[in-house]
Image (tube, rainbow, N blue to C red):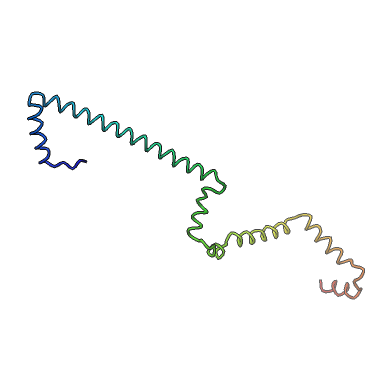
Length: 146
């Protein structure tokens, strides 16, 4: 901390013995250690207070960023980092292709399973067989083939 070597400590010990005296030296050392502990405690409290202020300031900044529209969109930030031009996304637009394919399959399934649609198809076929515009020769050829 203060970068004091053994030589400096030896000189301080000799001066303490000369100035304070060997009889009062243990009491003086206890008093000095109490002051050092108290100074360390105050420094620790001060540092904790500063850390708390910094933490609160960081939380306030984060809260402001979250409150802004589109503030903390992690998926958007990752997408911008990976594909800033959007070219990869366009090339790999599997969702749109899959959606189109699934929509077409659903529409086909609705046509096949819709009872109203099936009834209309039967009515069309029946109407087609009794079409007055159709000639007798065509009806006869259809009956012969079917």
